[in-house]
Image (cartoon, rainbow, N blue to C red; front, side):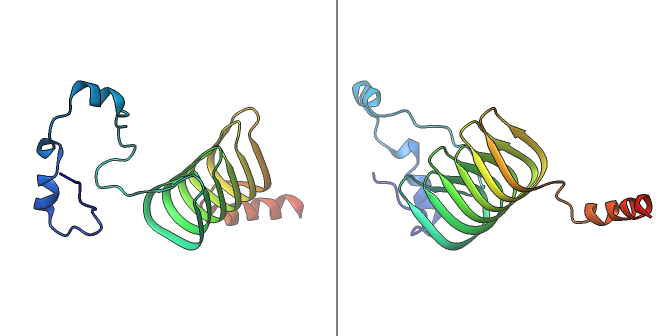
Length: 166
């Protein structure tokens, strides 16, 4: 039985009928030739968008996406939970993220509310705000860098600077 695309399938009963139990058993040789399925990286009910290699996604706004995986090129604005940029991936634009894992290139405005991880092959340029940062040896971070993501932090620091100056 062929699996139905969830985009064009409005009934849940048909998707359940096409589940693993409804598929015919494969011979042991066929299972060895086919790649083993990978465990899903996101929990059930969470949304994941993967921009594959050689794909260019330009001029979009990405919302309600729990995890964005960038293996190609993305030019967008987004507000999400997690972004993962692969070694060959690039993101240009503005992103407000809980956790950012950068192995490729990010250029623009990045707010990593919880954690920013730049791996040895990663390069982040632009205006960057973060809660916590981890940079592997070889990773690059340049531009306007600021600790803290809450908008109330900057005014709280202002009176301290004014009283020490005057």
